[in-house]
Length: 538
Image (cartoon, rainbow, N blue to C red; front, side, top):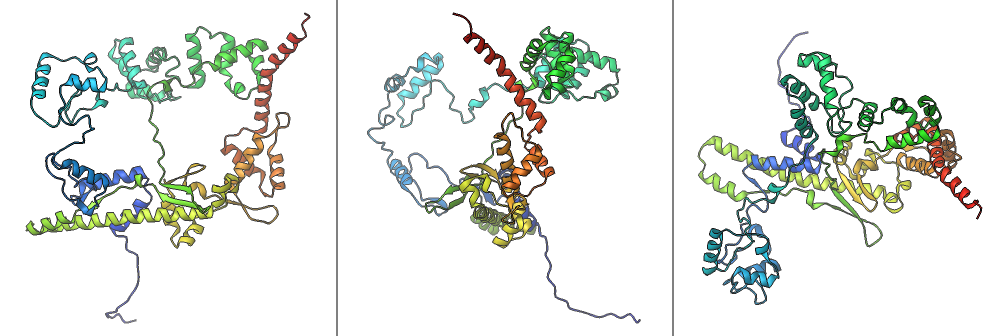
């Protein structure tokens, strides 16, 4: 076969992932907090981006208010501000108008006594008298408070004491040797927020270049620090430390602490035999255990929890439907300063500077469009979810329908990956609480009678209702729950029931029977005492 060269034209379509397109895809899956952080970085990086309030300059006192910038309409509040700016003539009924007088007269008007709270130095009093003597429309007073713009009340708030700082303070007092302090600080750095150390400290001696006995000796001293039970390696050790502090760690209590698994199972009979005590003693010992703190480190500063801010609000509409709207507080607002770019284009002569600002303009314009497209896509997806799950909003979790990404994507004519990115890290505030958008996408469980399929979340809710309503004398097993669900038209396997039950942290039927029998047993002595009190002879 002879080889030859030739020219050939071919036309084809392909998707090119430009940086702008990748940025738009990235914005879709960001939460509102991550999006705000991303926009802040772009505002610092791009000189042509600005907030809507950045260019709004406050009116200068003594000058008439100018025209609203960015084409903003002047409302009633602007008209009032403009009227107050002309001639600076305040209203007659304003207590800050006219001759303000001295500070004492102002205090009498407000019926306050600031001189009883704040004291003045002679220099401050002289400065105040000079200020009162000078004719001025604006008078500053505040009982000696600073008028500096950098004045911040949060600077006077005490810092939150962390567990590591609290232990480090005790470490500096407990040890005088530098080597022991280094070992102790190393162990303190390993303590989690609950106050526990890792179960295995075998590598601590190797990393610190010391012996295991020295590490254990330092650990024994640290475990006597405040709060009691700190730096334990297990729950049993934590409770044992607290019991030693209370001088209650006798052999019977030691056996109880070493067999906490029996206490968790509420196997009181086996626990009583292990401890070698009677019913009354084991009840008192369990009461003492319940008064201990299983997580002593949580008394100190821990991680702050961020409140979920919904991205979408769903409210009942006047026509019986549902009104879906975006949360405007979570949408960052940015503007492209075209005027600044036009002025720069007239003065810039270097090609490198021109290309830089051209790229800045292109990126800024694309970011504004991407933010707008992101908001529209979220609203479109949320509206379709509300339409598909209208039974949930009207009647509750039991009427949640099976839904997948493909059904929503086909309805709004988008790709499944786009819907998946939109529903990630987004929350919806409804009349039944705040839910993540992915909550409404549940698997489908077939119906026993061949009817409409059931949502997995609705089935879980049904299982929880059956268990909550069960009689203490007749605990429902997983097989019994399967039979009752099939009687309700839900075709489900026993292993699926067990999986849903464990996901909801509901114990097995054996454990629930022990728990409820133990709860009834705690009430029996009181009932028998009442009966004996009623049968006593007069």
